[in-house]
Length: 349
Image (tube, rainbow, N blue to C red):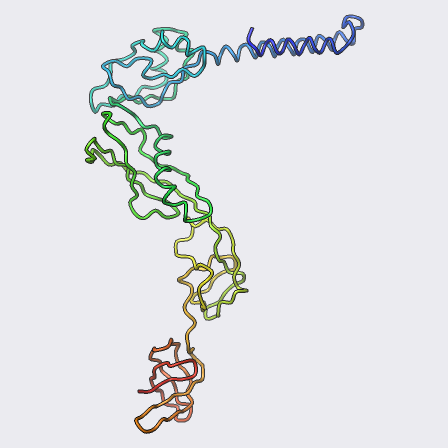
């Protein structure tokens, strides 16, 4: 009897001893004892059936790289239990089909595989877990989807780990299976452009022993990068000056932010385009606070060789130091162009 069955028997005996009475003394206890006994018997039976069902399973692969001229059971199967492993030496050399030619790919459906296994050994078919279909191709190795995902992540994680607080990969679209024709070939992963949060396009290169390109495949993966970034504490309108109280820091998925986010430190800044409450503050939405702004009053200064003249003016456009801006003479109402010297001085040279 298997260990699970022995444990169930021990539970039953312990319960009877704990009960402390002969269960046949009264009818009410007989009914309860019989019910409990039936429950334990059912449990023992299920455990034995499950143990027997799980003790002989062989796992049949979805993708098989064939090296020899004949496909054997050992090529397509893996023992998944101790009992299956004990009989592995007897069954792994069973010949099933003729191997495909170089470059040829064969696809067999589950019923075809089960029919072939059953024609050799009925128990072998019953003890094998067969996928919906199996793909065979001559080669030294085949990469499954799980193996390709691992290779892709090994390539991308070092590149993207510094982009945010947390990096997640999902929605892999890879050209599986990938067969290598000989033991000298290997896979190299490249990205079509600089890796960034969002959909990343991949180049899966198969190289020979001399690092020459044998063939190139393509795929992609979606990368979520979570980071704490500067966001608007309130709606910010165009033309407003950005103050520290207008900023709060929130965790955002950079995969859905297509432009550079302001670092939250540099400045001072003025809002160039409106930003909604809670939205990340993009660098393109900011502009430097001008030295003079449209509507400001300043002094228009003319510096000659022997004389300096100054008249009050109204600034007609924004400007930084050194920019040429239009101003209006408040006395003559004429528009003149000058160079910004500071926030209160426009020079005419």
